[in-house]
Structures are given as structure tokens and as C-alpha cells.
Length: 630
Image (cartoon, rainbow, N blue to C red; front, side):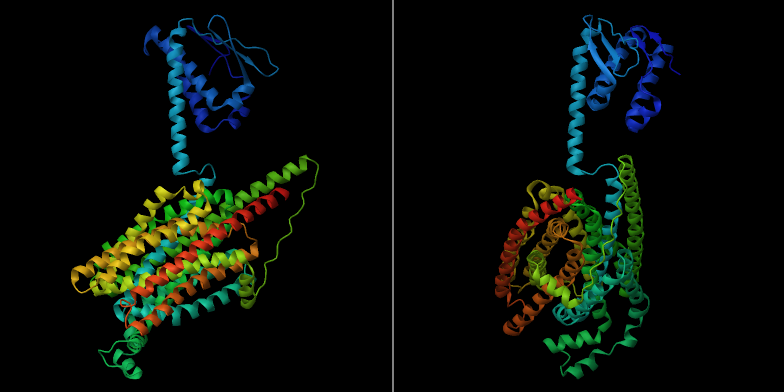
């Protein structure tokens, strides 16, 4: 207990004038702790002066009190300037007066000997302020999220983390199944004749569900069936594949091809004889579009305003960049170490199931947190209106727009803004598909065994995650500092530069194992950096483009673009490559034509991003103006 007036040699203490409740409510916990430390040290000096340095300790303590006081003034200017008036006397003393109506208390007197110490204290205090300012700038640069935003960020971030983990595991598994069983050429067939029709059917079903279900029910209804299928595939379908699939010889006889024949009919025979793997490929491809594009970004766009998005979205990519590292190493160091591929597949499905469970858990927790924030904000707004004497005006619940699939397509076509966003998504889908099938075909030649191929793809996924983190570390503030336009055109520009050495290696020839290894290595780097730039820059800028739009455009237009746009891009690229194979004999011989198409798409992508930049800024300003008028 501190007495009202307790003297110390050279120092006179007094109780703080503001009431205790008011002070505790105003000061953060860290500042209260600093006050407790100073008062406690004062008690030690008073009771045991010799134990802490005798008479010299008194001068040191006086200097520390003065330095702590000045540091408080610098950090709590607004608070202390209202509570105290600092008046310097002619005898080098500092007198504190209350700014309230109460009487003046006894002053804190600092001896005249402190004049010698004052200069050192001021420089030390200035150094401390500079250090704190530098640390604050570093934190603002690395993690510019504060207060309750931190909880919100991590709840949303972990949803994307586990979505990416499941996506990475299923993506590597589908490639391993199809490429090793049917060949890389089967990817082009599956994307056209399997993925595109399935995506069209899914978007029709999703548009219907969006019209009748609430957002949370829509999320679970969309998410859970994918993971139910993955579990059934690992537990029931794949172990019994030989019983429910026709033999390769039977399908070759139906399609009229020999065992050693090549070409389109041979690829189709392999696909039908391994239809369970083809089905897994189609479902995993739909999940890759739905999970990130609809499940996560649609939820994030609903709850993250533009002001937070410029800080949250790049860091979402950085946090989720850890997921491919863990998923890839799980596949390399645990799943692929199984005795056979069947056991390896079951281990992968177990990890996918865990990730799906965590997605639902964190989605539930995020909604609870956001609902709590909304209730607090609504209560505060109601209290303010009641104090002002105005009755709160109940908000009208907006009805969800009900649109058919045809109406959704017409709506997408009538909006220039959404057409430009679709061009960005189509551009990435086409350009990445032009190089991906060619690269996977080369990888299949070098790693024909399924477990070897799985290990390679696992290491590649880990490299993608690590590369994404590195790219974000250097480019996390590109959007915030240089603007949306620079972030939007960065990905096609990077892909254009990286495509040059890859096509050069393919055109150089693959006659020897050494040249094949070089081509695989260069193609791996090209695909790696293309994907990292996509996750770090393309995804945040594309998803930010939806934020200024109205609810109807977000739900229906975004679903059409993310599923149909992405699928049409990749399927369109596959269709073009099939045509080139018929003309040139194989995809490697068609490399010059693929290169021309590749760069044509990239230049169109950059032009669309430049045009969309102006519309995005205009829509953002309109949204801010509407929010001010509400």
C-alpha cells in the first residue's frame, strides 16, 4: 500500500489522481505492468536502500523514474497531457499539477545534481524511442495486423491452410494415378471429356443451391461430399478396382487397337480400363477449383473489407504456403515409404480426411468469432442511437438473388467487369496448361514407377510451398505499396520470362538421358515459379477484384468464373493441344506452335489486367462512398 505522502531522499511520492477504475479501463495491460514495476522498485529502494546501492542508488532511481516518466509521455501523449501539466521550475525541478478540479498535490522534487544526469537520460530515452519505432516499422512490414484482427486472420488463414493441404495431397495423387496408368496424354482427354462436363453440371447445381440455402449450409453442402468421396475411394473403390474395372485387353479390343499401339484410341482404352482413377482425377480437379475459389475466397470476401484485404490476402498466401511443404514431405517421407502403392494411397487419404475435418472446424470457429464481433458492434450502435434519442432502425434482410444457369451466363456476359476478371482466369488456365502437360510427359519418362513419381511430385509440392513463402517474403507488399495493377500483371510477366528457357530446352532435343534430365529440371523450375507467383500474386489480386461488387455479382458471377472460367481455360488448352497432336504427331514436335499460342495468351492477359485496374479502383471508390452514406 502506498501512503498519500511518503518521503524518500530526494523524492516525494503521491497517489495518482485519476480513480483506479478509470485508470485500469484506459491503460492497456502492458502499461499497467510497467507502473507496477516502477512502484515496486520504489518500495525496495525505500525499505532496503543499502541493498540496492546505497545513496548512489537514490540518484539512479531518480533518473530511472524521470526516464520512465518521459517514456510514458512519449507513448501516452493523449492521456498524460489531459491528466497532468508539466511545469519546470527555476531550481531544476519538475512540478506535476492536476488538470482536474482537485487541489494540487505535493511535487516530485529531483535534486539539482540530476542536471548532470539529465543529458544522458534524454539521449538514452531518445535511443529507446528510436529502437521502439524501428521495431514497430519492422512489425508493420512483416505482420501489419493488430488487436482482434489477429484472431480473425488466423481463423480464416487456417481454413485456407487445410484447404491447400487437401488440395496438394489430392492433386499429387490424381497425377500419380493417371500419368502412371494411362500416360500424360490422358490428362488432355480427361480435362475435355471429363472435367469440363462435370464442372458445368456442378456450377448448375451450385447456382441452384445458392438460391435456396443459407451461406453456412451452402459451405458444408459443397465441402463435405468431396471428402466423403475421397474416403470411399481409399477404403472401398481402389482396393476393389480390379473387380469393377474391365481389363486393358478387353478395352483395346473394343476400340480396335493393338497392345503396342499409340494414339488417341489407345489412350481412351487405357482411360476406360482405369476408370476409377479417371473418376478420382475428375473429382479432384473439381475440388481444386471449388475449394479455394468458392469455399474460401467467397467466405473471405464476405467478411474481410477492402481495408483489411490489402493486408490479409498476401499473408493468407504466406500462411497457406506452409501447407504444400508439409503435405509434400508427408507424401515423400511417410506415404511413399509404404510397401506398395495401395498402402501409400491409404496413408494419403487419411491425411486428406484430417484436413477436411479441420476445414469444417475452423469455418465454424471463424463464424462464431465474426458473429460475436457483429453482436458487440450492433449493441454499441444501438446504445449510441438510444443516447442520441433516436430509435434504432432495423435493417432489412436482403433477399438472395434467384437466377438460373442461363441467367447466370447472361449476367456474366453483360458485365464488362466480370468479363475482364474471366479473361484473367482464362489466361492463367490456358497458359499453365500449355506447359504443364508437356512437362508431366517428360517427368513420366524419367520416373515411370508410381512410388518414384509420387516422391518426385511430393518434393515438387514442397518446393512450390517454400517458393511461395519466399516470393511472398519479398513481394508481400507489392499490392499494398505499388497497387493492384502491378500485382495483377506480375504473374503473366514472370511466366513469359520463364517460358523462354523451357521451350528452348524442348526444341534443343531430347535424344539422350542427359538432355531429358536438363529438360525436366528446367521445366520443373518453370512450373515451380509459375505456380508460386500465381499463389503469391495472382490469387490475391483476382480475389480482391470481387470485393467492390454487389452480392449478386459475388455469388453468381464468381462461381461461374472460378469453376467454368478456370475449367474452360484448362480444357480449352487441352483441346488445342489435342489438335496439335493430330497435326504434328506428338506434343513435343508441336512445341513451336505451343510457344506462339502461349505468348499470345499472356499478352492478352496483361492487356485485360491493365483495363480491369481502372475499373477496380472506380468500383472501390463507389463502395467507400456508399458505406459513408449508410
